[in-house]
Length: 218
Length: 216
Image 1 (tube, rainbow over the protein chains, first blue to last red):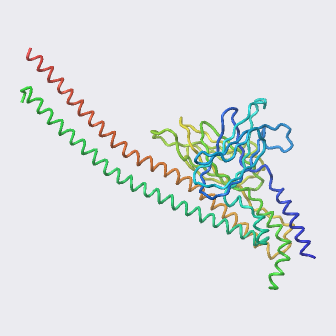
Image 2: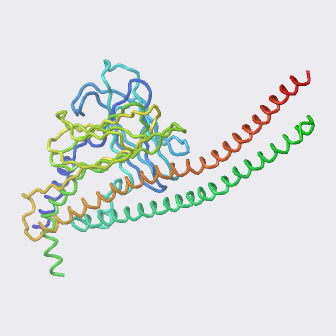
Image 3: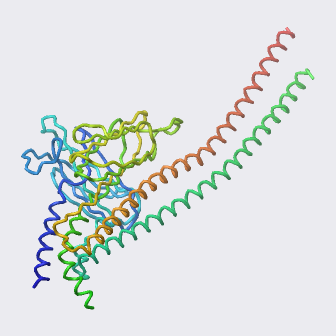
């Protein structure tokens, strides 16, 4: 009996917690009157991306505002494929799993101008990798809750840190290779430059000698 | 077995505290953008949050620039008060505690004439503890520690993002240097050849003029 009550209380408070976390989350940026504004992020392949965006006018996001501007959005993969494209929208979401590693870009621009010259802002709430994981479905599937779920989240966080560290190590390896190549290049090409200098001056002397001999000066 | 069942009952009641604790993390937003003159971002922060932010200039579009390509960053609070003023830096990492709830603005200014690619990361989160639900004294320190652990892990991820951005910048500088070594050698050889041809030409003209004058 007590357990069922406690569980009910828990679900109610979970929902309350979800509402405590405000929907006006994320980073807000101002859109210019003409032209687009693009945000990008470098991501490896096989990473889940979930994003939520909303347009508003004014200093802060007001749910009950009657003035709703419309914007357009385009999301591109590193090779230029369009992953998401929407026109004249105020609030939307998109999600995808990355198939190639590189820079993923999201571009926003304002539709027309009927906003009385006020600047339009767009809020972007962008979650990648571990932050985008749907913990509710994991909890339901594996029937874990509470403390075990939180510890599972922490374990996933630590795994993500470990993967990041691997990526950093790989990048450092690439940079080391480039440094070694630069070292070899500086050595060989300097010697080549010096060799050309010596050869050219030698040719110069030969030519001048033959020229002076022809003009009977020597 | 008995111990597990006992915990389970207290757990469900106290777990609500954990839910509200751990849902209070604002999340981290690491993005890259190209800055022309000025770019501003706003972020809504709750009272008491510790806000960590970092930025790295990844690359500058001008190919033969020699000066340090730094940007200015001004962080302003919701009432317009200045929290941080950073001038001419290529990368930096700071944190501050938000004593007022509201919208904080991060404004970047680019003083160099070239476009620059900037990596900006902001992370707001704090350890909020709702006392009224956790009635059990045994679990209070446990949840406190789990909250601290989560905060520490988020901090590590934030610092790793900054380190990754700096590594990207260094990779670009390294590649430029590598290509520059070859270009420099080629340019130098070409300049030497042109200089010696010019020398020969000038000497010939000098002697021809001298010879021409004396023969006539």
